[in-house]
Image (cartoon, rainbow, N blue to C red; front, top):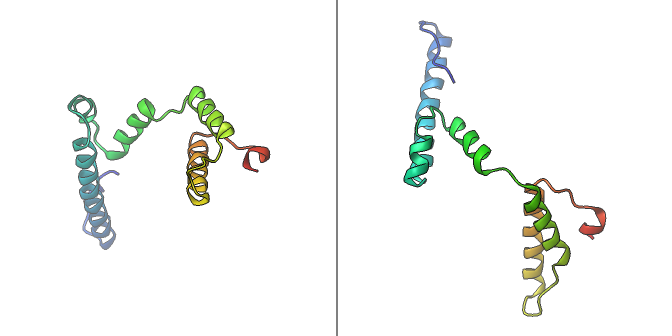
Length: 115
């Protein structure tokens, strides 16, 4: 977000209030993100101006899901069987977690896998 140009209209006042609110929230989020990083990462990302810029850079560096990871998750899902010491609720919870991981990794489950 860019600071609005100077002015004295009612719209300008609203724009400035919105900008100041955004600036404060961005600053808090940026500080929170940076403070949760290791020192090495913090030094690498403290030069970014906005939280969104940091997020995009982190996602580019760490967020990519490799084909290997998707394949590993699919195999884990395909060979998973209910453990004897788990009740049905635990079994379904584990299945739901695996399905969520697969979907977030960009893997589409076939009808056969879903059944």
